[in-house]
Structure formats: C-alpha cells, structure tokens
Image 1 (cartoon, each protein chain N blue to C red):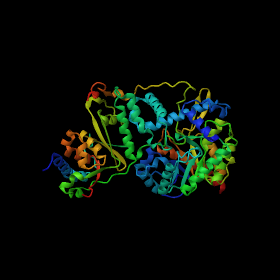
Image 2: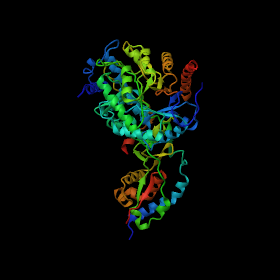
Image 3: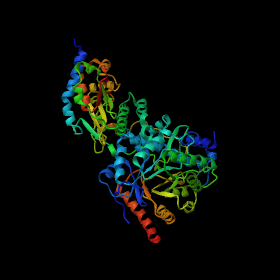
Image 4: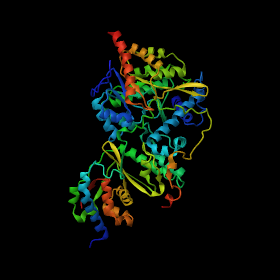
Length: 92
Length: 256
Length: 288
C-alpha cells in the first residue's frame, strides 16, 4: 500500500527526471533572463583585502581631535525609492 | 608581558578609539602632537572597516546613504573586531547588526539585503558544482527513492525574505533607477557560482523551504518529515524548481 | 624602452609592472594588455576553489606575477597565524610567483586585528622578534621573501635605531630581501622629519629586490599636515625624484605602480609604469 509520502516522493523524482534533459541542454544558458535570473560580479569583484592594502585610505575623513562622533543611524540613502514599506510588507 | 606586547596593546586600544592616555608617553611629540598622530590611525581603523563592509554590501550602502553607513560601520567595528588578517569574511555579522537596529521598523528589509550580498560573496569563493547524474537517478528502484540523499552545489546559498529581495538588489545596480514596491511580496533567491560569475534565480517558497531542508543532509524520507504540509503537497514542483535553479549537484543512495 | 608584452610565466623582470586589482582582472584575462608584470594581494586568492584564484592561475600563464601579502602581521607578538601561513604556502605552491613579499609591520594583538600596517618600535627586542618570524615564514614557504618598509604616522620614544637601520638589519638577520617603497620613505620623511636621501643611501646596493611607487594624500588634522599613504593618486614629483636617486644607486630594479582606491583605467597605471621605465632607461645609458 503506497502512502501519500511515497506517491509524492516518486512523483517528485519523476518530475525532476522529466525536465532534467531540458535542464542539461540549457546548462550555462540564460533562461528567462528577463525576470528570473541575474548574473553579477565574478572576477571583477574587488578583493576584500585591496581595501586593507598598504594604504587603505582616509582622505577627507579627518575628524576633530577627540570630538565625539555624530551618529546617524537613520537611513538617508535610496530607501525612499522603496515604497509601501512600513504598512503592508510586515503584515504578511 | 614584554615591552613590545604592552606597546601593541596600548596602540590597539588607542587606535580603536578607547583611552589613548597609556600610549601617549610612548610617542615622539615633535612638530605634530601625538594625539593628532593617533587620530590618523583611528581614522584608518574606521575607514578600513567601512570600506570592507561597503565592498561586501554595496546595496546596503546605497540604501542607507553615506553618513548612516559610516555610523553603521563604527557600530560594527565596536561590536565585532576583526579576528583575521584576511578581510574576506569580515562582514559576516553585518546582517545581525542591521536586524538589531532595524527589525520591525520601516527599514526591516536591510538585514535581508545584507544576507543576499554576503551570499553572493560566499558563492564567489566556492567551487563550481557538478551536474546531477540523471541516468543514474533514473536507475534507482522506485521503492528506494525515499532513501535518496541529494547534495547541493557547494556555492549554493538560499536567501529568503518577506520583502522583494532580488527586485531591491536589481534596482540598485548601475543604471537602474526604478522604485520597488515593498508590498509586492516575498522573494526567495537561489545564489550560486556559474563559471566566472555568480547567478541569482528567483525560486518559489516551497523550493526554498525544500532546499533549506535538503541542506541538512537527510534522505527524501527524512526531509519529508520536516516539511510543512503545504510544501509536501507541491513536492514534485519544488524539487524540480530547485534542480532548475542549479540547486542539486549530486545524489547518493546508501546501501540497503 | 617600452612596456613589455604579456610574456608568460617567469621570474619578475627588472622592468616596471602594475598592481592587479579585481576590477581590472577581466581585462587582463580577456584583452591581455601589455604590462611588464603584475602584482596581486595574496589574501584575495586564499579561497583555493574560488573564482578569483582560478582567474589568477590563468593570468599567471600570461604575465610574470608577484604575490604581495597584507595580513600576515609579521611584527605582532601574537603567534604567527598558522592557518594564514598555510593558505599562503598553498597559493605560492600553486601560482609559483616570481616574488613573494610581506610588510615590516604588525596588525594584531591578543587575536584582535586592525587590518592595518602598523609601525614597530625600532628596538632590539622588536628586531629580534620580527627577524625570527621572517625566518619562520621563509622556512615554511621554502623560499626567500621580500620585506617592505611601511608608511607611518607616529614614532615611538623607545626606538634605539633609525627606521632604515631596523629595515636593513631585519633583512640581514633573516636573509630576506627588501621591497623598498619609495613613496613610503617620502611620506615618513615628511611625517617624521628626516632626509629621504639618507634613507636610500643607507640601504645596501645588493638587497633590494623590488621597488614600489604610489600616490599619497596630504591631509590636514587641525593645523597640522600629515602625509597619508592612500594609494589613490599619481606618483608625485618629489617621489619621482627620489625614485631617480634610488635607481641611480640600485640600478634597474623591478618597479611596481600601486593603486588601490579610486582605481583608474589600466592605461593610467601603464602610463605611470612607462615613466618608471624612462627613469630606468636613463641609467641604462649611463651604465653602457
């Protein structure tokens, strides 16, 4: 007697095999490139340790000696381009 | 403690912004005061931290803006001093810092964006995956399918959010200017290395939950027991979607 | 004398090269611009299976390559990081770089890293410590390393010798060569008030295996000016003059243009390298 579990697991692997040939045929080829998929960085990504190279930088960041630092923890960047945030998204 | 150790410890305290008094008597004071000289190193410490985080999380930096990001980097430096001479994984606690500050606020999504950006960085460091041997899988006897254990690509990272994560990321790539509707719903992203690049694909919630469960290394039978009922119901679609997103690289079948 | 062309793997030639940075990596992989040689930051390639390490291996087939470490923290009293050293050793084994270099500095104490290149006090204690660690690194790698002088913004009262005496002695005791950063000499001469020519003249003519050139920033802190080694600008005229003096003393030496922040197009770096070549060519003629 096959259980629901057996049926669904068998069906899952069968389904995977059925579309498998399609998957293999499309290895490395953009599918649904418009919406579904995004490629990025790769070898052009800056190495993390370049920042820490023998120089790093602090140009223009000089602060008054010993003065307390101003903390700005309220985002003031492009968050404003994200609309309908506070009300709907959290109620999911 | 020898003299060199004491001096390095005093330097470290001073350069992190703690009390510089113990170090001051050790410094030459000609022309430029020691306190000013220490300030150069304090500045370096903050800038190194800021640049490392910005290198890892450029979208978060754009979202919060320059001034806020600087403050976040200072919070981070205080909370998570670097423990390695290699900065590659320096930002790993950044999502937690963002969650602690913004969870439940209108900036609730920032932690998830940082998780996606760190996942991209992680994927860059992992090997490329092999492809699933479908012929071998087709040969598994039907009564043994429940014992099959799927292995995920080493570079695969699954990141989910109740916010439109990939849409936000995409809107902050060079040239993009569109707005994103935060109420457009959850997005789940499969991140992995493909050749010389990192690929991100949207997957559905069921595939995401299945992928997370498979990551535990259990057989399909064992994974089944962990899945919520609504995901069990759509298991064929979820497994196929995960495979299409490149999420499965190998399978094994233990001896019966 | 012109830039070299991609000539494949080999020792670092005594010509000008440029730093290899992530954003330029694809250009070097696919377009193979003519550059004498390249230098990469070792730590960026520590993930053996990652994209960057595979790319470096391919670039290595086309260009002489040097590996330059930024995080080993040779001068720290913390134990040498065995994991870090292992990763460096594996990378060196795989890439077979023409040169391997590290900094004469420290960066961590009690396990906490500042990821900066911090100056040591020029004392007998620090000298014995750092020279021993340089030996340990060379033993582990099975080859000589070059040790680079760093920029500094403060000096310790406890120092009992000059920076150049410390550098020369550390190299001599450990058997390491010297990577002489001419910009760092200039920066320190301004920050600490010494004659940069004195520094260069104190370096033995046979130990310099490489020279670095970079841009710096003059930064104001209150009413004071401090030169900060920012690697974000063209090499300044004063440093070119000092480089001239260095080549006059040491002869033709592999010379690297370093640029880390606000990275310009590769052509800007190659133009700087071409200028270094002109300086070296001038002394070729005199020697001939």
